[in-house]
Image 1: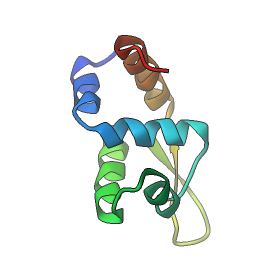
Image 2: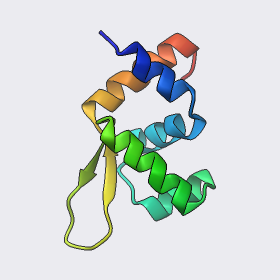
Image 3: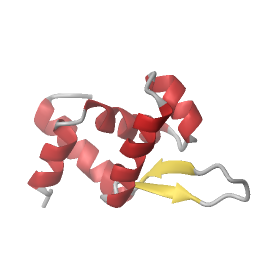
Length: 89
């Protein structure tokens, strides 16, 4: 069963959905995500932290200081339901 409050939260933030869609295609680093979505790095940082706190994305460990993010299983499930309810992709 999909969390309705989580679905509403996603719906209220256009970039939240865009980030999930982008990460569904492939894991990426914040700098690249920021450029692809044309969003300021500080705004993206908040979005990524919110998505991470809600377990919709995961951090991929790396040896460098740069964190790579990927969509989680929950994130994929929620995105699929979101698209089904909203008639998207």
